[in-house]
Length: 240
Figure: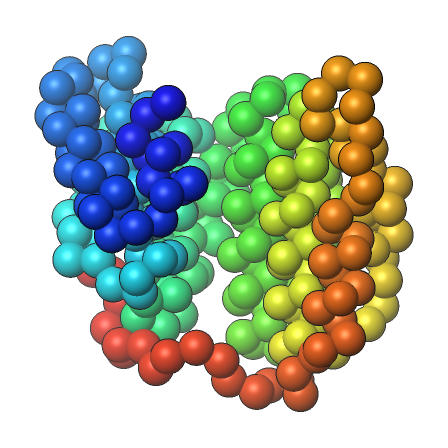
């Protein structure tokens, strides 16, 4: 188990700091453009994003964005595009600059368009795109864009294969957040209907209750009034 995976499970500050430190070290140990380069960059993005999600700040975010952006300029590798999109989304959550969110959607679209339709990575790229699209649609109060985000989420669930329970869980969170902000009951109903049909097969021969559907329904009963702000105030400047 690598440091970024351990940090996802143990979200203490020392663990997350260690994950970021090890990710930088691993990146410095590979040849740019070499075989292990995209994975090292993806692990760096994941580690930095996890620390931001846990603590709401990260002094190394701009450096990580610069490294990913330079890498993307040299190759259109979907892994790198998706990782850059993850960090740009983190920039938006941290600083509130809508341009960062626009850039995140743009590069995540490129990541989705890169691999073949049957690629095992594509579901992850799709759900990351759906998350950012929904966030932007909610912000702009664009119902058609929100509907497109839900379509992308459904596409991600359909393409997820063995990872379907995890992707369905992320999609459920997207639905809940969108509904809590906009009150879009039709989209929530469509999403619940799609999730209900997902077989949550966690291991061969074993089925478990469908947690995402229950989570969506429970959250929908505690809806905030549409438009009510949440979370701390953010900085106005985005990632350069």
